[in-house]
Image (cartoon, rainbow, N blue to C red; front, top):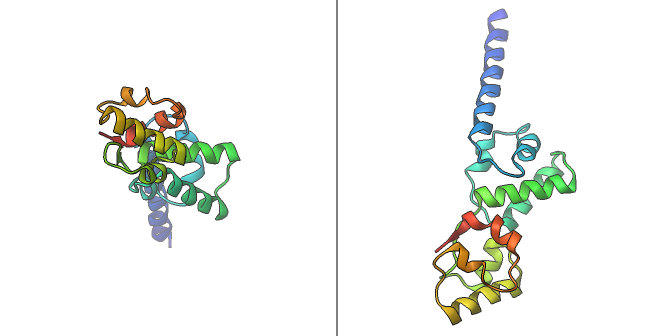
Length: 152
């Protein structure tokens, strides 16, 4: 009986050590600590970080987890969604995507997505992130959040 308890204890210790390693491997940034606190109690973080979703899908995932018992304020939830979207979003080519794909994939409004496509049509393909900053009317904070998910 002692041996069985010892084995169970070792699995528990291994799970804690493994969880700490997963957390240490996560990208730094705003929302990381909240993500770890809210999401690591029920499952391994690798279950989350191997997924690549657009922001809208991360919103559904996080809302589902909250409905299942993940605890956090509305501000915490928004922070986790932004963290996941920024670091584990689905990359999108800004020069070949339609306005609808930009809206869905990067969570810009329909109007902002149309602005991007119109600007690209008028001025040519974007070559750098800095060129995107020149598009008038874009949400700069959202653009910064989605920076890692934009391909040229």
